Each structure stands twice: as C-alpha cells, then as structure tokens.
Image (cartoon, rainbow, N blue to C red; front, top):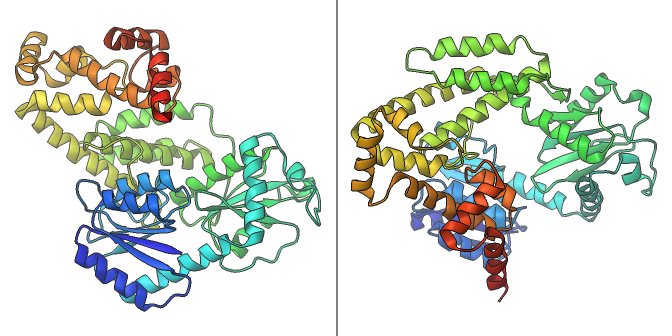
Length: 467
C-alpha cells in the first residue's frame, strides 16, 4: 500500500510520515508528502496511492475538497481526515465523502497505529482473489439491474436455493462469519454487500436476520422485499444510511415509505427555515410530533432527509455547495444533531440579515453564485429578500458591478452550462441544473449568448479534448 500525507504545515506532514514509517508495517511500501491540495492531486495522478491522509484546514484547497477530487480520480481511495478542531463542519463521519477515519490533532501514536492497523487489515482482505471474484459478479449484477440473486449465483459452487435477501454494512469483516451458503463482496463505496440465497419461506424471518447482524458485529441495512439484486441493494443501502437516526439498532429493515413523505419533509424544511435563536426547541418539538405519526422506517427516513436538507442549506448559506454538508453523529440518536443544525441555521440566518443590510450587492452576488439553479431566481426575488425597490437596487447593482442583474445571472448560468456540457451531461440535465424550466428555453438562451446551439458546443468541445 502507498500512502500520501497532505498538510500545508510541511514539518507536521514530515513528522507524521516519520512516525508512520517507524511502525514498520510490512504492507506499507512508500509514504509520500505534499504541502498543498494541488501538489497532492499531482501525486495522485502519477502514483498508485491507496490511502490519503489529509489535514482539513488548508488553503486554497481544503481537505474535504481534496478528498472529493481524489475520489473522482481514484474511486476506491481510502481517506483519513486530520484536524485540530472537533467541530460541526468537520464531523467525525463524512456522510457524502465516505471518510474512513478522523484523527484529531495532536495525533497520538497509538491512535494512529491502531487506525492504520485496521485499515491495512481491511485492505488486505479486500484484495484477496476470492473477494475480487465476488466483487465482479455482484457489481455486474448491480450494474445490469435486472438479475436476481439466483441468476447471479446459480453457476457458482454449492448454490443452495433462491435468493432471499441482501444486507449492507459499512466496511468489511475482520473475522469470518460461519454461516452456510452466503457471499460477501466489497463495494466501490467502501461498504460490504451480503447476498444470501436462502429458501423463499424464510425470507421474512427477522429473528434470523438479527442474529446475522449480531454475528457480523456491524449495523446492517437489510432488504428482502425486492426481486432483483440492484433493487435489493438500493433498498438495503437506504436502510443502512438512516440507521444513525436510532443508533441503538443493530439491523434496519427496508420498508415502503409513506406515500406523503415528500410533502411531510417539505413542510418540515419550511418550518425549520423559520428558526431563530429563540424558537429552536419549539421547532424540534414540532418535528418530533410529526415524526411520531409515521411508521418506524418512514420516521427514520423523514428525520434523515430533514437533517441532510438542513445541512445542505447551511452549506449553501455559508458559501459552500449542496451535498457538502456533514452531520455530527454522537451515538445518541437524532435530536442532538438536529438541534445543532437548527442552531447553526439560526446563527447563519442572523448573520445573513446583517450582511444584507450592510452590503446588499455583495450579498446578492453570493446568493446568485450559490442559487442560480433555481428557475424562479430573478430581480423580484432578490429585491423582495433585500426589501429594496427594483429601481434603487438595479442602479446600485450596475454602479458596483458594471453589469445589470440579468447579465450577471445569465453569465453565471452559462459558465456552469459550458462546464456541464463538456462533462457529457445531456441538454435536459444541464437545463435543470442551471435554472431553466425547459431544454428549449435553455437552448435559445445559449445560442443567443454564444451564437451556436449547446449541442454543437458540446460536440466541438469534445473534439478539441480528443485532439
């Protein structure tokens, strides 16, 4: 295994590298150091790095951005975050980025040794020949989307019966689970998939599945209500992803969610946006009351979606991007994480109000840059939020930027559209992501600005990349 350590305090980087080398792990072939995110990406491009250990607080590219870009280059890259701050935004579990571990500075020698030992054991297991074979057949089934467990496994040795259920958990097993007729494979996202070809009459035996989870020793998401591998996997993964809501649960079974769940989540999101420094407890009680009206699995999905939506909203309001939010999990259910989110949202909203008063144009520029995908974003919305007249704000905006509001909004949308088109997204996908209600209206606006249709731009850009 090759390691890459990244810290803009290069002396700290070298000290950590020396400490890791002193462990004399035979599996570690080489340890690289980088003093910036840009240098780290260059090394990732040139070397076959399996483990990235990066500080979070770096500039201009921070550790979270580096991990996201690193995983785009190497999807199976194992990542550890290092920080001197144990705060909400850094959270010990990177929900979107699949962070393997989080080391708090100053990193203790035994903490590092134990964490690396576990990572190396998992990596060794993952690389076994049997594991690679199982990964191949399972992942092919997940990609095809139309194969049952029986079809996947019927040509393998000792196939005992029809596929009954799929279980998913984080990480891999550190010890063998002795159960007849099962296969475990490691997925690219760092999770394990347990495919059990069991007799159909036992497929709903929840006690047996709870016993399985106890033997695995991990929280599991399980589905037995689908027919195809891909369907079972999606359901089991959703069940696992919401298990944090009731952290004491060893196993979470997928169920059909309530038909009106989207409406309920939307109502809760709007209610949460009313939060102030004085009413967070009241809003938490309101959400808890609404949650109690749902069945157990729907209630877990309800809370999980609210927390992620609020984390996204906080990230955007704080100058980040959606899907970059992190939730601080403390092992005691959902109330404390949700309260942290509500208080953080109230704090940011208060600062935003102050910022709007002091610098309305600067605030509007930041809002456009992070919300241009909204198709209802226009001058009316911005002046409504600022409490200013159209004429006054338009003159102020033009004086400070040299452009009209509409010109600036169009420019933001078209820059993002060009980027998305060159990354191969369809015209319809791009139109939605840059705030147009239809592909036709987007195509007209694009042609007015650049003189060519978006399709021609896309094909021309790809030809230039190939040449």
